[in-house]
Image 1 (cartoon, rainbow, N blue to C red):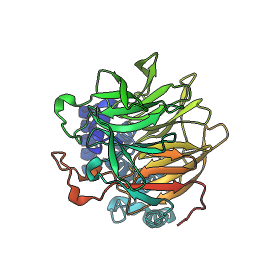
Image 2 (cartoon, one colour):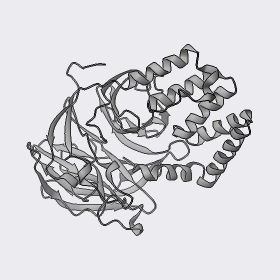
Image 3 (cartoon, helix red, strand yellow):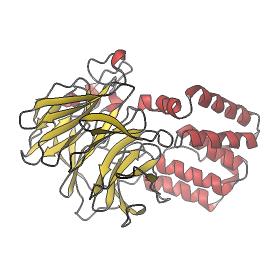
Image 4 (cartoon, rainbow, N blue to C red):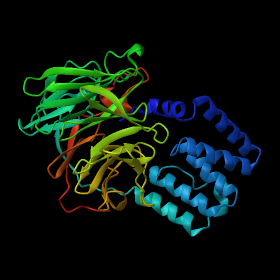
Length: 420
C-alpha cells in the first residue's frame, strides 16, 4: 500500500503538475463563487480527468453538473462518490436542490445506508506476538510449513507459528519490507523493499530508494540485491513458474521485471495509470492483472505487453484496490481506499477481459484498519486485518496504545457466504 500522505502530491506531480492543478482548482473556486457555473463545470471536468476519484474534485463535478441542470450526470457522479465513500454529507447541500426530489437522489440516500451494512465471512486465526511489526505482505512456505510476514516498521521478515509467536527470519533489509513471494519450487524468496518515513531509521536522503532481494530459503542467505536509480516505492511482486519476476511501482506507474539477472523497466504506464498496487497472474500466466489505486485494474498481455482496463459494474467502486489475487477465473480485491473497507470478488468472463459479476466477501468490519496484501493458500485467502498506517504521528512515531497486535484473518473462498 502506498503511504496515503504522499499519494496526493505524487499523483499531481506525475500526471499534470502540482502547480498547474492547484491553479486550475483555484480558478474553479473563483468560477463557483462568481456563479459562472458553465466555467465551473468545464474546470471541474478537467480536474476530474487529471486526478480521478479525488474526493474534492469528484464532489465538485457532481455539484457543477447539478448547477448546470444536468441531472442525470450529477446523479451518476454522486453515485460514484457514494460507492467510494458513503460518509460524504451531500444531502443538505443547496447545490443539489434541483435533484433532491428525484427518485435517483433518494436511491442514493438508500445506497449510503446499504453500503454501511456489515458482511462477515473471514475469521480471525491468530494474533502476532510482535505488536509494532506493522505487517504488510505474507507468504506461506508450504514445504517448510512456515508462515512469513514482512515488516514495514522494523525492516525485516519474521516467521510465526500457529500461536502467533514471531521469530526473526531475515533481518538484512535496508528498507521497509512490503511484499514476499517465492518461486515455484520455493527455492528462493523474492522480497520488495522501499524506504518510507514509517520505517525505523528513515532519513530524507533515503526517500525514494527501493530494492528487490533474492534470498535462498533453505539457508536464509541473501543471494542478490537488485536496485535502480530514481524515486520508487516497490509495493508488490509476482513470480511466475518460469521464474520471471514482475514488480509494481507505486511512486511511478511502471512495471519492472528481473530479466537476465537485471532489474529493467518492462512496461511504462505513466500516460494512463496513477498509483499501482497489487499484481497477480492469471492461471496460465499469460496475463498480469495490476491494481491501480484510483483507476481500477489494468490487464497486461505478457507476450505483447498490450494493456486494457477492466470495465467495472456500475454498482461497485473501482477505487482503492490494494491487494489483488487471482482465483478460479476471479479476482479477489482488498479495497482499503474506500469507505467502508471491503473485500470483493470480481468474476471474469472466459477470455478474462471483462468483469461479469461481483460478490462482496467482507464489508464494514470493525476489525479492518487496514488490510493490504493477501496470500492465497489453496482455497483460502489470508491477510492482516489491522496494519497501523493511521497510527503514526506527524514525526512518524508509532503510538502503540492506539492499536492491537497484528491479526491474521482467513477467508475460505469455497465456504457458503454470509450476505447483507
